[in-house]
Length: 306
Image (cartoon, rainbow, N blue to C red; front, top):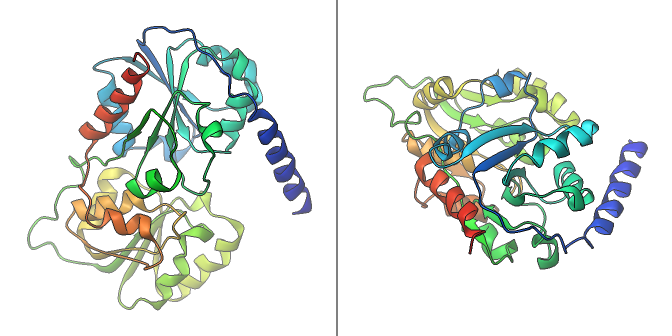
């Protein structure tokens, strides 16, 4: 535990050192080859079943660009840098102050393509000089834009695959009163599910749980909650269809955006906690689809020409 904290603080110090590298200059060039940098194990079950609004948006980008997935493996930095530099633009699916962000800043002088950050977390409020390291940023909610985004080329980009997350067919038998979708991690506040009555279902990437959640899973199961591992998109949609309410108890920095829109698309009622203004916004927002998501990514990519 102590060693982990020391590593964390050392990395944070290193990060602030590399914040000084905001003078990254890119020689203007056209964009034909787009790389999508992701932090996911290509051998994992999650990757094999990875299907959501983002993956569908990337597929649609292929109508305008040659698009390639790049897997973030920091231990082989020379190979990764070579792969990055084979592209004209890199969509970085990550967030501020992550391992991926550290790596790009640390090696900024060796990176030639434009960089665009698809912000996938909301727990940091970076200063403007921290943000301009990227040529483009994309955000998921208006709440986050107002709170944190200070970039001249910032675009909303979010959505789900509504071709799969379709309205629940009429007369579908409801098996569950509550469904919760999300990895068992502390910021998901899954313990609040214990206060809900009725048949309850939790679906999440169980391998991605944190240490504090291990005992909680046992407690949930003992209380009658059905706990299932990460599963494919079509199967997930079928689980929404047999549920009455989607409960999203996350902290404001605990995600939940995607499952909320998926549930709304399937016609479920949605419950959130009162202390989460970010999710409050999504209760009444448009239910954006993969076409919109892709168009917004494209808008950001093309903005570097201007």
